[in-house]
Image 1 (cartoon, rainbow, N blue to C red):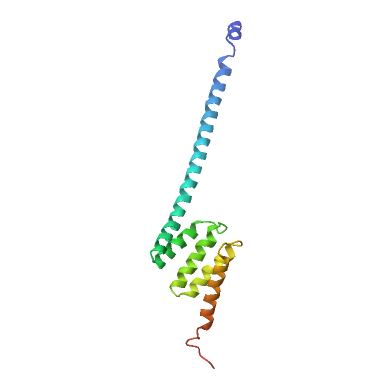
Image 2 (cartoon, rainbow, N blue to C red; image 1 turned 120 degrees about the vertical axis):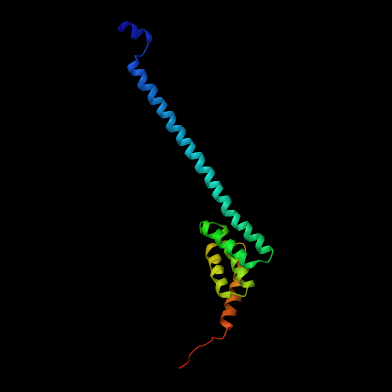
Length: 149
Protein backbone atom coordinates (compact mmCIF):
# COMPACT_ATOMS: atom_id res chain seq x y z
CA UNK A 1 0.00 0.00 0.00
CA UNK A 2 2.83 2.40 0.76
CA UNK A 3 4.24 1.80 -2.67
CA UNK A 4 0.87 2.76 -4.20
CA UNK A 5 0.77 6.19 -2.44
CA UNK A 6 4.30 6.94 -3.56
CA UNK A 7 3.39 6.13 -7.18
CA UNK A 8 0.33 8.45 -7.10
CA UNK A 9 2.22 11.40 -5.62
CA UNK A 10 0.77 13.00 -2.48
CA UNK A 11 -1.57 11.16 -0.20
CA UNK A 12 -5.16 12.27 0.34
CA UNK A 13 -4.26 13.36 3.88
CA UNK A 14 -2.12 16.10 2.35
CA UNK A 15 -4.16 16.81 -0.80
CA UNK A 16 -7.45 17.62 0.98
CA UNK A 17 -6.03 20.36 3.31
CA UNK A 18 -4.16 21.93 0.38
CA UNK A 19 -7.34 22.05 -1.72
CA UNK A 20 -9.36 23.47 1.21
CA UNK A 21 -6.76 26.15 1.96
CA UNK A 22 -6.58 27.06 -1.74
CA UNK A 23 -10.37 27.50 -1.91
CA UNK A 24 -10.38 29.62 1.27
CA UNK A 25 -7.59 31.80 -0.15
CA UNK A 26 -9.48 32.28 -3.41
CA UNK A 27 -12.67 33.25 -1.54
CA UNK A 28 -10.84 35.78 0.64
CA UNK A 29 -9.06 37.31 -2.35
CA UNK A 30 -12.38 37.53 -4.24
CA UNK A 31 -14.09 39.22 -1.28
CA UNK A 32 -11.20 41.69 -0.96
CA UNK A 33 -11.37 42.50 -4.67
CA UNK A 34 -15.14 43.08 -4.47
CA UNK A 35 -14.73 45.33 -1.42
CA UNK A 36 -12.08 47.45 -3.16
CA UNK A 37 -14.21 47.71 -6.31
CA UNK A 38 -17.25 48.88 -4.32
CA UNK A 39 -15.27 51.40 -2.29
CA UNK A 40 -13.90 52.99 -5.46
CA UNK A 41 -17.32 53.21 -7.09
CA UNK A 42 -18.99 54.56 -3.93
CA UNK A 43 -16.38 57.34 -3.59
CA UNK A 44 -17.02 58.32 -7.23
CA UNK A 45 -20.77 58.39 -6.56
CA UNK A 46 -20.18 60.51 -3.45
CA UNK A 47 -18.17 63.04 -5.46
CA UNK A 48 -20.93 63.14 -8.10
CA UNK A 49 -23.63 63.73 -5.47
CA UNK A 50 -21.56 66.52 -3.90
CA UNK A 51 -21.04 68.16 -7.28
CA UNK A 52 -24.81 68.00 -7.78
CA UNK A 53 -25.40 70.64 -5.07
CA UNK A 54 -22.82 72.99 -6.60
CA UNK A 55 -24.26 72.58 -10.10
CA UNK A 56 -27.81 73.26 -8.87
CA UNK A 57 -26.52 76.29 -6.94
CA UNK A 58 -24.83 77.63 -10.09
CA UNK A 59 -28.04 77.26 -12.09
CA UNK A 60 -30.13 78.95 -9.41
CA UNK A 61 -27.62 81.80 -9.16
CA UNK A 62 -27.73 82.31 -12.92
CA UNK A 63 -31.54 82.48 -12.75
CA UNK A 64 -31.43 85.15 -10.03
CA UNK A 65 -32.70 82.91 -7.22
CA UNK A 66 -30.14 83.97 -4.62
CA UNK A 67 -31.61 82.40 -1.48
CA UNK A 68 -32.15 79.02 -3.12
CA UNK A 69 -28.63 79.12 -4.58
CA UNK A 70 -27.20 79.92 -1.15
CA UNK A 71 -28.95 76.85 0.31
CA UNK A 72 -27.50 74.57 -2.37
CA UNK A 73 -24.00 76.01 -1.99
CA UNK A 74 -24.13 75.56 1.79
CA UNK A 75 -25.17 71.92 1.33
CA UNK A 76 -22.23 71.50 -1.06
CA UNK A 77 -19.75 73.01 1.40
CA UNK A 78 -21.11 70.75 4.14
CA UNK A 79 -20.13 67.73 2.07
CA UNK A 80 -16.61 68.69 0.99
CA UNK A 81 -13.34 69.13 2.82
CA UNK A 82 -12.47 72.70 3.81
CA UNK A 83 -9.08 72.29 2.14
CA UNK A 84 -10.79 71.57 -1.18
CA UNK A 85 -9.74 74.26 -3.70
CA UNK A 86 -13.33 74.96 -4.69
CA UNK A 87 -14.23 75.88 -1.10
CA UNK A 88 -12.96 79.44 -1.60
CA UNK A 89 -14.85 79.84 -4.88
CA UNK A 90 -18.15 78.59 -3.45
CA UNK A 91 -17.78 80.58 -0.21
CA UNK A 92 -17.09 83.71 -2.30
CA UNK A 93 -20.20 82.97 -4.40
CA UNK A 94 -22.28 82.74 -1.22
CA UNK A 95 -20.82 86.03 0.02
CA UNK A 96 -21.66 87.70 -3.30
CA UNK A 97 -25.21 86.39 -3.14
CA UNK A 98 -25.65 87.81 0.35
CA UNK A 99 -24.30 91.13 -0.95
CA UNK A 100 -26.95 91.09 -3.67
CA UNK A 101 -29.53 90.50 -0.94
CA UNK A 102 -28.08 93.49 1.00
CA UNK A 103 -27.10 91.24 3.90
CA UNK A 104 -23.49 92.21 4.58
CA UNK A 105 -23.47 90.65 8.05
CA UNK A 106 -23.98 87.15 6.59
CA UNK A 107 -21.96 87.96 3.49
CA UNK A 108 -18.86 88.81 5.49
CA UNK A 109 -18.87 85.39 7.14
CA UNK A 110 -18.59 83.71 3.77
CA UNK A 111 -16.22 86.26 2.29
CA UNK A 112 -13.85 85.79 5.22
CA UNK A 113 -14.09 82.01 4.77
CA UNK A 114 -13.14 82.43 1.11
CA UNK A 115 -10.25 84.66 2.13
CA UNK A 116 -8.97 82.04 4.59
CA UNK A 117 -9.52 79.07 2.29
CA UNK A 118 -7.80 80.39 -0.81
CA UNK A 119 -4.20 81.42 -0.32
CA UNK A 120 -3.62 81.70 -4.07
CA UNK A 121 -7.23 82.45 -4.91
CA UNK A 122 -7.55 83.74 -8.48
CA UNK A 123 -10.24 86.30 -7.57
CA UNK A 124 -8.41 87.64 -4.51
CA UNK A 125 -8.64 91.31 -5.59
CA UNK A 126 -12.35 91.05 -6.23
CA UNK A 127 -12.80 89.28 -2.91
CA UNK A 128 -10.92 92.04 -1.09
CA UNK A 129 -13.16 94.64 -2.75
CA UNK A 130 -16.28 92.79 -1.65
CA UNK A 131 -14.99 92.61 1.92
CA UNK A 132 -14.15 96.33 1.89
CA UNK A 133 -17.62 97.21 0.54
CA UNK A 134 -19.32 95.15 3.25
CA UNK A 135 -17.17 96.57 6.02
CA UNK A 136 -17.88 100.09 4.80
CA UNK A 137 -21.62 99.41 4.78
CA UNK A 138 -21.56 97.92 8.26
CA UNK A 139 -19.41 100.73 9.66
CA UNK A 140 -21.60 103.41 8.09
CA UNK A 141 -24.75 102.11 9.74
CA UNK A 142 -25.80 104.17 12.72
CA UNK A 143 -26.44 102.14 15.84
CA UNK A 144 -30.11 101.66 16.54
CA UNK A 145 -31.78 101.47 19.95
CA UNK A 146 -28.68 102.24 21.96
CA UNK A 147 -29.24 103.42 25.49
CA UNK A 148 -26.71 106.14 26.25
CA UNK A 149 -26.30 106.89 29.93
